[in-house]
Length: 620
Image (cartoon, rainbow, N blue to C red; front, side):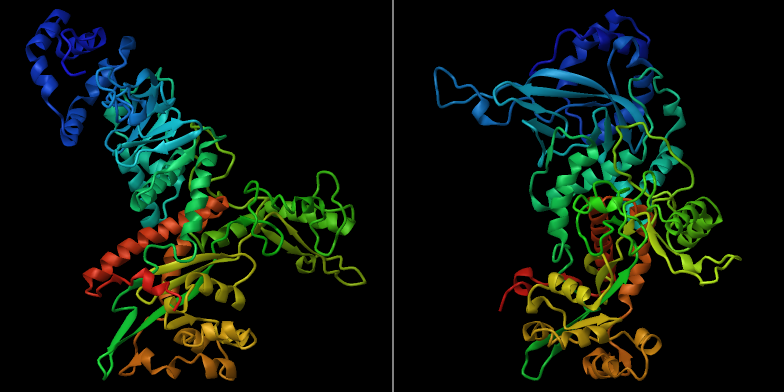
């Protein structure tokens, strides 16, 4: 609307009349005098925010009563006409001139907005429609067919996480920072929000008859974090985020985009994969004037774990995080849990009818309910960050997937050995060794490759074990060309890796032939036998003079273990995540930490920089 209306709508007149304490006629007369000035003033974002801070109580008291429909926030699509020029009608007088097509059929919903400044507040979200291209336009995305495309250039302050729920982008960023710096779970983010950020003078004015709730729960935090991170990822790459519009849950809507990002992050996907600085690289000028560089990285594993298929080294996704097997191996759910037994389970049990097997399952269930369970929980609490202290209810749309762990239960990965269970009535034939695995299997560890300065270059999940071949495969994926290989690959098991490589094809041996593969000093002295000839011959760091200077080590060979102390703090947060969220979350935490580490290195005068990717990835 180009010109201001001469008469204000009834709801605005009644609202201003109550707020200002004047009659409706006085409101209309004032509008006639001031409407041109008010209409021409274009509020800046800071001015709009200041106005909300000043007048929020007035809107909560008088804006929502008597169906006035005036909220402190009214979320609109960022355009009034269809941006597709093909939809615009042409002028009869000039067929080459295309007019803009107005968006019509406005629809309005009551929503709850989770804000950083005010806490949860009521508001309204509007959508419009183009009758030519059949596109619906919402606050931060438009829908055509079953594809939801998010705006790339329009900056919107809120993202929609449910039909009636929006989260402020600044709040999403705060949650992400809390997760990365303090290992704050989604559950505790929600609790901190309600206990520390909700304003009592505002919450006391929230309407009791609002159609949707005002409580943020774990799913709201989790979904807002993942959607916010996806939008940031697409913004950095200059691409448009596309999600399915119709989905069984918000988690399922996000899953394809999370999986695509995970594929890009595998191997060389981290932004700092090509990092270099004076702490992890040694630059030397030769007599002929040429420059050489020695780049040092450390590889190590840290135990986090997520549910995976019970078949060793199976990489298939579980239908649900509570399942024991993937779709391909789901028939094994009907096989006795005792190892070496192939009998079918009895109805309602995880073992067959064999009395010894049934007794083992009974003992397992009793152990899960008693002191044994408390002991296992205590052991896990001593090695990971606590996940939660109190339960928190949920009010948003529910997902089938479990988002976070809440302690041990009968589905946790537990392996029982009957020979370790002592009883007074030992049979004459001796204790029979019977082993069974109940519950789910978990991945073995996360393998990190860390520059000696602390920048994480890449990550991979190891399923069965941290075997030498798995480590070499990780290196081959992370450094896909010989030029991308660091000059030094520290690993605490390099002696076994060297022994394995000697039996590999020549092409694989040659790939790593020019790379120093020492064992770090601590493990070399404390974890490896002095008589281990392979270790002393191949992996003693003193074999490479470039690794030391003036009797001191040039590089930090414990960088990975120091990084693991930070990385291991996410164990309680991620242990119940499905694979796509687990991988995305860890990669995003690494990306954020790397940004902070680069700033720290710059402040220390270490001259962090990016080595040109095209040079590292060149074949020759």
